[in-house]
Length: 84
Image (cartoon, rainbow, N blue to C red; front, side, top):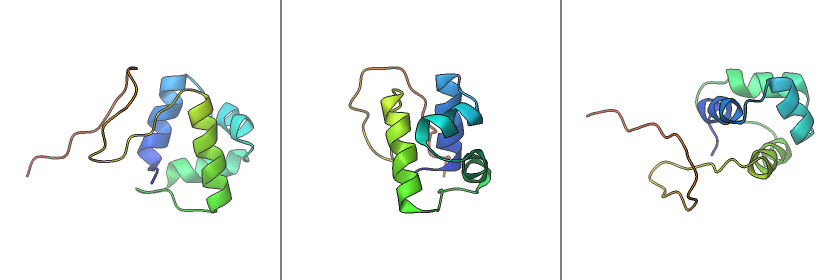
């Protein structure tokens, strides 16, 4: 699952604007804008989500799920669980 926050952070790490990400992923700019504006987990066409994830992967982004361990050795950012 990919969240809007993860998508914005990934794009920021790449130094890429929404238009560049749209071109890289083969999606439209309004689609990228809608995905980033969503609340929480991005919902949408499975094909579009797969294109987006593949484009981020090809650009060097490793998406890390909650409670998952990063397998790469690169730099990254992860949100901590809020204190209970």
